[in-house]
Length: 128
Image (cartoon, rainbow, N blue to C red):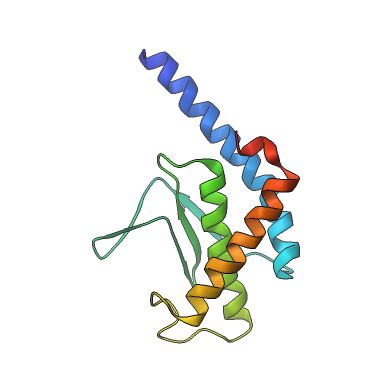
């Protein structure tokens, strides 16, 4: 592919991601019963202490890494992190909540999957 074609393809991918996120957020907010959203920072890549990551939640908000990812995959990561945001609002997080296999992490994975099934059903155009 020529450079111009690659730039257009990249621009199209980011436009599609923006559109998907715009459609996704109201649905996710409804599913989680959220009245507001945390700050959401979109970055090309994320790395925490040498560990690459697709997303992260902290008291500063949510960070998403998007480089080379499909819009639906980014939405799924956002759903997972929004579950952690909701858990935080409900005072359910503790120092071990982010550990693999913790109840909070398992809930975030499970609920994100449910949200994504509803999103894919309502907005199938983003799957293709």
